[in-house]
Length: 153
Image (cartoon, rainbow, N blue to C red; front, side, top):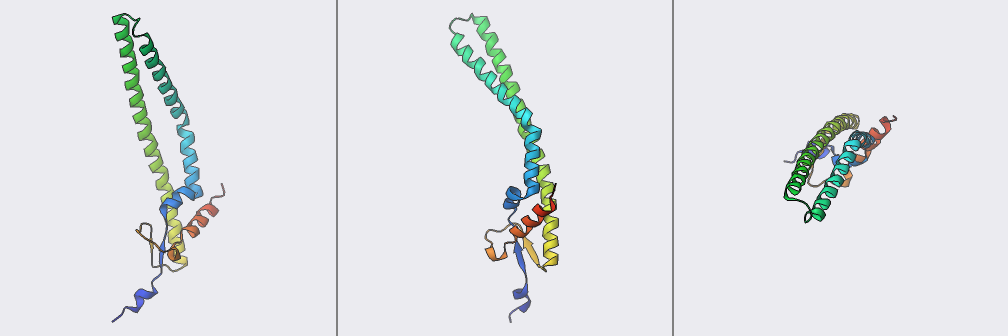
């Protein structure tokens, strides 16, 4: 006996990766994060350049330095390098945390839009994860249009 109801189910699929790439709120979030972290990023790049200069200079001067000077400069270099590694790690952790916070907000808005579309157009289920989804059931464009349209800021 065949289940007639299963054939009438409306299934939709939304590509979350595309939402994160193309939706206006996601782009706004990305720009916001870049702005927030640009100064720290620049500081880290300057610090890396300073480390390289110190390291190059130490290599060049190694033969003419006294033992104590060489040891002192090696220690300074090691301290700066340790500081740099720590700041770089903190930067990455903070950046990831902020990105996750912002993406969670985008995802929440996306899910609201998906629910609205699903209710209005009588979808029975909408997937956001699928190994394969036919373009026939892909409603990502509709979701993007709704997300991009509502964001007139």
